[in-house]
Length: 289
Image (tube, rainbow, N blue to C red; front, side):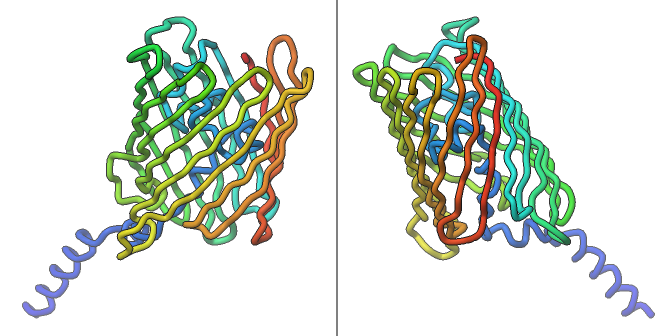
């Protein structure tokens, strides 16, 4: 009887000490949360980190919020037709009230997966950036993730970044994401180097993402790429983009269009998986430039 009692105590301690399933599989990187973008960013393949033109700069590279003085609010949603992902986003950036300090906030509510794997996600990010020089800005952000359903998470992490401006139209961004270790695969750490070009009615971006822990046991990072461009024809922005996610093994081609009004913009984007069946539609309303 004493032996049985000791075994029960040992098993109880083991159950308390064992990590949840999500933690036990922390080496399996899940890149789904990186899809939380506005319709404008989807249209250019997610290559928005250096440009800072959309309010989702608070999630992309917080330093980019200071690049363009404006007050901007975006409400956007996206749906994958196969039911894997649906989310709504509200993002705000204010870099006009105080030229020395830009502030931004974003909120995402999503359902991920289908059937027994469905997860409900609530994610908030608060960011700030400030000019260090006329050609350099610095930004930081804090992020909270609350997930329930097939997997659960309650974690806090953050990002940090730099944004450089050369010759008025050439932009360079360096950013680190999820820098506070949470051991949650949804908040895996990665780094990005981004380039941007903005001149008149034309803008283009190129993002490189480096996931050092994406392949267990490999010293080399998985390198993902996003590239895209926008050209404004009168009051109609036209967008094209490409995105490669080597961690998930997916390649996407995207296109977008918009309508500019006196008070804001309406944006629509479509993303097509080239090596699979995922099809995504995103619609957004933007108040501000």
